[in-house]
Length: 158
Image 1 (spheres, rainbow, N blue to C red):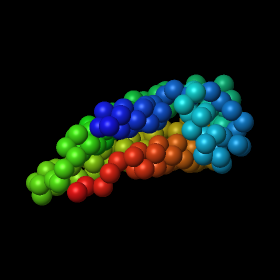
Image 2: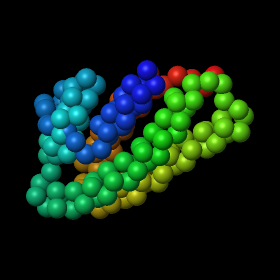
Image 3: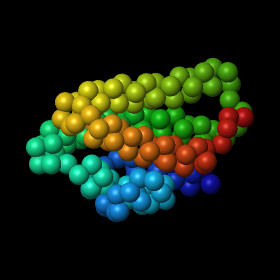
Image 4: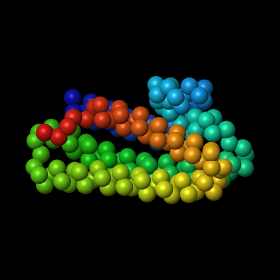
């Protein structure tokens, strides 16, 4: 059971990395099931279809996007390692271990926030503000869907 949950957590985290096929733009952004499916199929194509970038915008946007996805993947790995430890332990935690786990999860969040601030600055230079805001909102929706799936699977600390 522990390995199954761990595998699920890693699979969900992998959906936040670049790997997804564009579907209908409006349905994919408002319908969370469609969003999950689009991101799982080809995230990059989904983002491209949703933003409708011009060639000039795309030339400036994609390097920022790629750098952000790499940093996001590292943050997700950091979070997943902490959660794997929690799942494998499956017993009450000592106060010291609980403090360490909370610190590791917070550090992963801080890494992600720092990366989001950096990508926003780069995307605002590459795109009009409305497209930059749309991209950030899209990343938020993708992250929130993945976080919900993980939260629904991970037990609370005993």
